[in-house]
Image 1 (cartoon, rainbow, N blue to C red):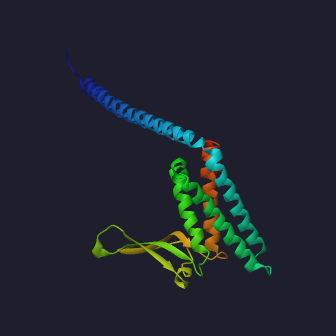
Image 2 (image 1 turned 135 degrees about the vertical axis):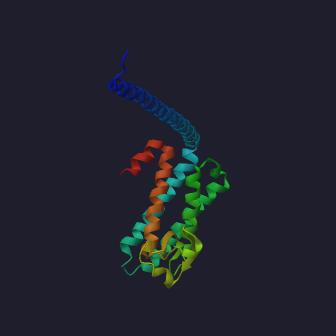
Image 3 (image 1 turned 90 degrees about the vertical axis):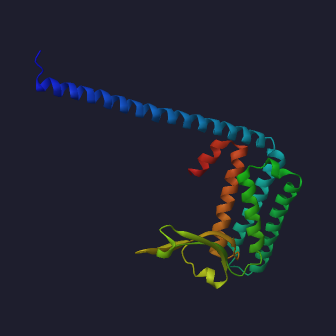
Amino acid sequence: MEITDTKIITTIIAGAAAILGAVIGGYFKAISAKQKILELNQNYNQKLQDNYLEKAREYTESVYAPLSIALATLSYSFRKYQTNIETDNEQELITELSASIDDFNSVVMGLMSKGAGAFLTTELDERLQSFGAFLDASKSADNPILKMVLSYKLPLLGSGFQETKNIISGKFAQTFWSPRLSIPMRGFGISYEAKETLAAPFESRNFEARFVRDVHIINVLIKEVTLGAKAKHSINNE
């Protein structure tokens, strides 16, 4: 039987197509298997999170409700301070806000002393401690105190960026007009980022920015427990 060039080419193409099909099929099967494993892990982690929140929800009345009330009272006091700061009662407003801060921290510490920390979500526990320290330090702050992260790249230090963290305060902290700045240059570069305000005077934008941010986050974390995980997603999407 005569084998023509056309038959040879057709056979080669068919064989290559079969091999390619097998390779592609195997590739997508591997992708599908990885996706299935990822979905199982996500479902497992979500189940753990739901159980975690369900256990914390048992302490709504004794832990989360008092926290919510204390936070609302503190927030009202700050808004009152902002609204009336231009009046002649500035010192009185400062005194009232400082007292509200003490009351809020007292509620938090009172709950912690009764073991409430064991029933708080980890994120909420850490946020409350950080926020409380910020509020307490701000009562006597004359200038902002910022935690900065400085990144730099120098030819002698290799190709990667190096980082260093510093606490800055006083008038020098106020010169950082932007919370983030990057200066790339050929062969090297430098950038800084204000990671967190550790303390700031009540009238400063630094205090307002962190106060508003932390109050919102703490509210969301409380509602995540009292209203369910979906509340966190809905609030974040507002």
